[in-house]
Amino acid sequence: MNDRRKSGNRSRPSPRPWIEQMQMRFGDKLYNVREAALTRDQSFLKDFVMDRSELSDSSSFSRIITFDTECSVNYADYCEMCSFGYAEYDLDGNELSREEIYIKAREPKGRLKEKCQADYSKFKDAPSWRQQYAKIREILTRKDTLYIAHSSKSDIGFIMMMNRRRETDQFYFRVYDTLEMFKAAMPDLEKYNLQYLAEKFGIEHDAHVSLSDAIVCFKILQKAADMNGLDIKGMFSKYEQISMSDSVDVLRDFIRSDRRHQLTKIKETEYNPIRGPLTGLRFASDDRMERSDPEAILEFARHVIKNGGSYVSGLVNANVYLWDGDKESRSYHFAMRLVRDGANLEIVQVDEALDGRYGQFPDVCWELQR
Image (cartoon, rainbow, N blue to C red):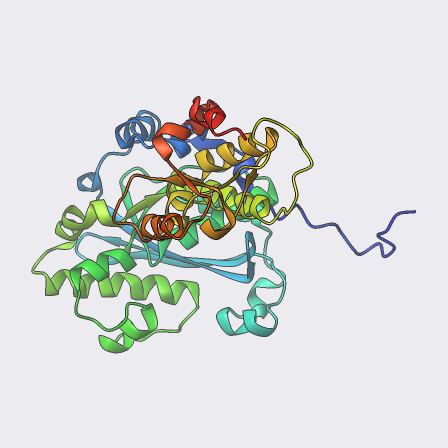
């Protein structure tokens, strides 16, 4: 019998992130971006993007678009965008256009209602994401335009999640994060959220309304430029490296987040029924390694499980510690203390044990067989 007894109950897509979709549109062409999303080689990533996007550095723009998004539903990797607000300016700060684009979404409830101040009457019967997609994509991919948003990776992520949920193409766009820029340009402020900054500089602001947030973001940028004795182009020239993020960056973040989630599930598995050459070995690394290279650590953990061992949480539960070579780290000092206290713990430098990104694991693993 079908468990969905009520016809109105539609199954929700899998909560796993949208990393399975590795195609991204650059202009009119779709490319597989997996290698670019996982690379540690910044020159490769830069060349990959430059060869496909026709974008250069921040000196090439003649206009600025500031934008913000609002979601009526937002949890984990699921969101329903209800509005996209943007304003366009020339380099002298003259406003050229502004618009609040509404997108059909559910009414926010409970805690979500506090975070979404968009007028439900304006988006409950608005066009769908698929109907608004082409317009939003065109706005975000103009060649001579520089884009800003406050805490930009959140906005990029919302747009990319909507693409995944509504089966529209992922597309490449890049944004300068004014949160990071303001922290660097105005280091003595107490807070850096838009509401605080608007009050600080006496700027009228309707918090959590996408068009208002977007306009306030630009006005604070002008204030920051004045305080630093710079024009708008000078601000981006000075702070470009610390503030730029793009859709490939966000894809990388989601890949790493997903890998860390899978590592957590492995560590929560109490018993490995597989018998093999690593049976009896319980491996652990520290959080820093899992954050910096979760895909390689995940491949290593899978290798260990496949050969009868375990990958566990915490050095007290392990008898093999994968160490990154940093003798100043707290994990290393803790491991050494455990060894001095008589713990059955072997310390193996990760460079000796781990080449997981290529699916190969050197002989040191087998030398630890018991």
